[in-house]
Length: 324
Image (cartoon, rainbow, N blue to C red; front, side, top):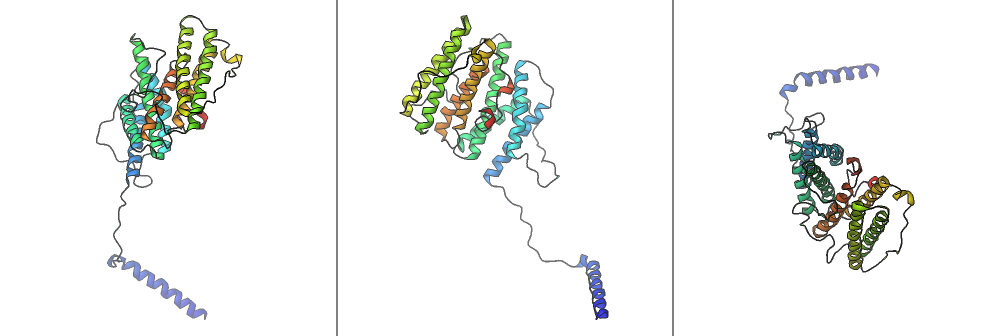
């Protein structure tokens, strides 16, 4: 038995050797490999990742100087890598492969951010009610804000007057310069009522701040309080439900000095902006327009407060729980 087993093993090894030496002459019939064709969702994701990667690459170039460039770099240094990570990074054909080189010259930072903004917002409104549209809206909104903030700082450095208190909509054709509260909306009544309360709380906060201020700072606080009051009234009417209170709580420490008052005003606006952006998830393109414009107005108001820094702006407004 042992002899037969040994001979069988030898025969198997011999057969393997023969096959190995003759392998170059043996051709197995197999189906040709089919290269998978990416669908539209994958193509859009890959393009978005490349745009964010362009921003990251542009950040490595020497700074041009000036307050606007510094602010743009500060916001995008946090935002673009986070966006790229959420998108899953730049596609490569196989592990260890390098991304396909682009034939286009590397854009400068502002150009890269502008391209990413425009394409992200276009996707957001084209695919508004999808998860991809929600993420695209966040990306485009962040880039739009970064460019706007940089422009404000550049204007101030050039002694161009920029109003501190104003109603601002999402730049470009997406905000359409329209009203920050529509005449009709498909947003749920409860959500609209909650927005009315948030604006009413903001109105109350600014009125308390104004009572502690004087001169220009008092006037600005009262102007912003009136804007929030009008927005609150309009939203409560639109909701058909009024859940506002006569008085809200505001700890004295939040308005004890000028720095605390600036921080309180800023936090109030940031919370409003985050809530509006959160509501764009699943919203139609029509709803997205006014919701994103209202969010932009709030974040812009936060940026106009003394002490605002890039770190105050969330990298995923409306999606990152920590920023709410």
